[in-house]
Image 1 (cartoon, rainbow, N blue to C red):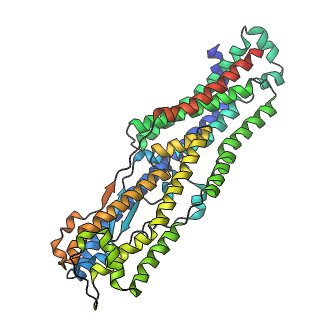
Image 2 (spheres, rainbow, N blue to C red):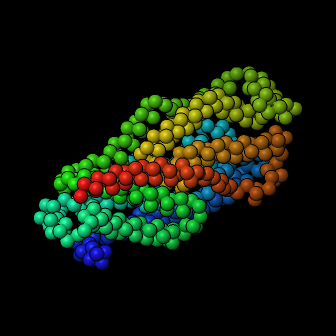
Length: 446
């Protein structure tokens, strides 16, 4: 029986179209991911070379004034890229891979990023995660929506029913062949991506692999349930496409609109303006107003003199840091509300497999917003360590040659991917099993 069903399926046009479509688009998405990784590598190399050349060039002109030299020098923190991010690019196309900052106020530099074509950002990247989430369900729908209704409408169902002892079993076999075909392409593309993108088969890769299997299983169970209602082809197609639109477009858009309005985040521009205002207004105040607050934050620098009648670097960098403190409340509020947005989205996604899969992919690939916020926290710590390592030398008017500049190369930050296997698998698995049970129960009507 299976031999004949396989043979019959391989002769259909939908088999050839699905095979060509999924494989070609899947390979294209993997190659796009490869281009993304190459772009990241080129950006990192350029940033490292720029920092090295910038230090050498500025040392030629400002080696006698360390405070002025460090006014210009920028130091780079790079979010160490992972090859698995090419499977699910997520928000990394809008959030910067690296940040080059001076030791001046951080809030005015924290949100600098590359200019991107807004139309390209709107359409997003065709990565493998996109193909799995959006295209695989459509192919499953196209192959399964008329499993029963086609036989009924062509008048062949009575003949098949007379020759088959188990009619429900016959439909399940037809469905299983199509599901196995889709799974085979999915597994092929995942391991092809692993080879081309040089992704290590670590925990993150297997987590994405299993989540992909569960996601396709969910859509397989959904197709089984709709087919088991024994309706005509037009009804099945309409219902399945409507569910696809609801789960992939409408519900995510509604959740996004809700969290945007429920947790309105102050713009990063506000923090930047507050930082600059907090710094610039210090020029018109007595130096004591700046230094008192600065000494409260860093009492170890109290012994350095601040002349009233001339410019001093301790006063200047004190003003810069006070500007950051002026913007701290707005910056903290923004971070907290972004975290709340993410928390609400994750809770809703537990009941929406498409959203859960997308968020899981981005989390495992370290391309989600939480990963970027962690990078910004690391940048804050990086900036703090830079300032404190230079302050003493600046305030003591040391020359530039007291610093070993070869140690000040671009630094890397490694993102941490912590996840729970139960949180990853259980929501989609439970929904899939529930829908599959309904579908199997309906098939008893046959």
